[in-house]
Amino acid sequence: MTKLCKDCKWYRKDWYARITGYGNVFDMCFNPILNEADPVTGESKGVFCDTTRKFHGCEMEGKYWEARK
Image 1 (cartoon, one colour):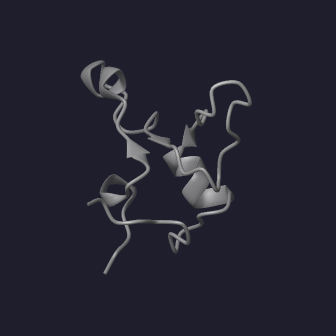
Image 2: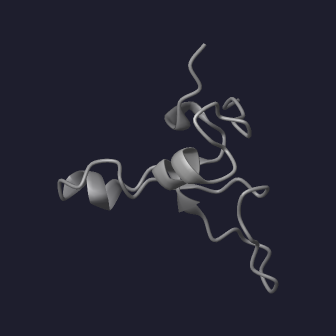
Image 3: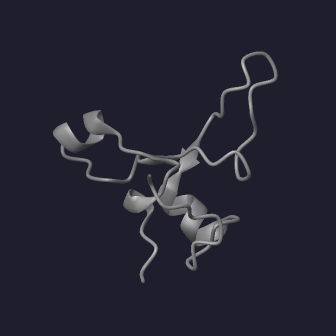
């Protein structure tokens, strides 16, 4: 089974980028393992999905991928 970001629990689509023609380059990953949380609110800042998969923690194998419920 291929682990795609769009099927992950932590994925959030950037609708504005889709509407304006930028595609999926601004879609975000909010996995708490890969992101720093704001110390005041506890909310994750998020990182770009493509960057996370290519260069950071999750990698192309999708190490921290979790299925949506």
